[in-house]
Image (cartoon, rainbow, N blue to C red; front, side, top):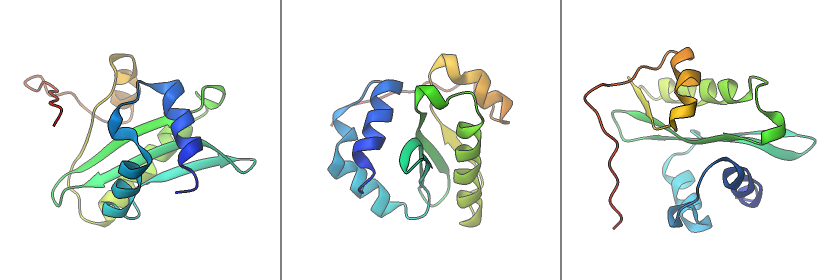
Length: 125
């Protein structure tokens, strides 16, 4: 939890934050999904983060982000693989993720595929 300010900073430079990205929600996410989230550090500072979750059937990779100056060095792929391995260990059979269009090729290159009949939909509660 001490990493949250650094994690939030990385998220802010990577995508739009939402009210769901609060410290309280971060703590609850980590509590509910032990061993499925990872950070990468350089000189004792967080430079990348990947959150993983599992609903008992399907794994999810959420909020994978790397500080701008450390991008294109294989860090995102390494963190993605770490989450996948942790999910595999707990018997997840598939991994889902949502990404911005400009990142689709990155995930396709990692072996992900798109589903033509799916649309991402969100509703605030």
